[in-house]
Amino acid sequence: MSVDKETVAKIANLARIEVSEDELESTVGELNNILDWVEQLSEVDTDGVAAMTSVVAADLPRREDKVTDGGYREAVLKNAPVAEHGFFAVPKVIE
Image 1 (cartoon, rainbow, N blue to C red):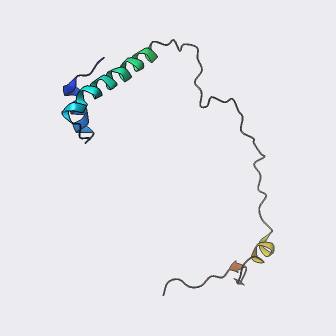
Image 2 (cartoon, rainbow, N blue to C red; image 1 turned 90 degrees about the vertical axis):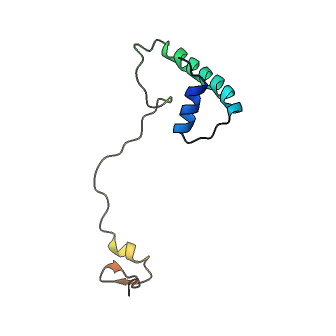
Image 3 (cartoon, one colour; image 1 turned 90 degrees about the horizontal axis):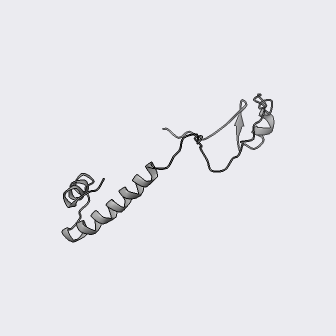
């Protein structure tokens, strides 16, 4: 597949990119080089190659899924500048 000046002008118009007449010729060459490279990639035999999400084979560490939080209300409220009725007390922000 290759592109010509008219195709590049249309792509530039669709992308809302201003490309001068002088830049069109060099852009045609660049896009054709990119398309040639993509065609080379499609020729690679990938049968039997497993899909991967990363180039590094790493397992994420896992932990037991259990509830561990709770029973620390008094210790947490010690950090509050002002605490009332077991909650953080903050100034009113809506008048």
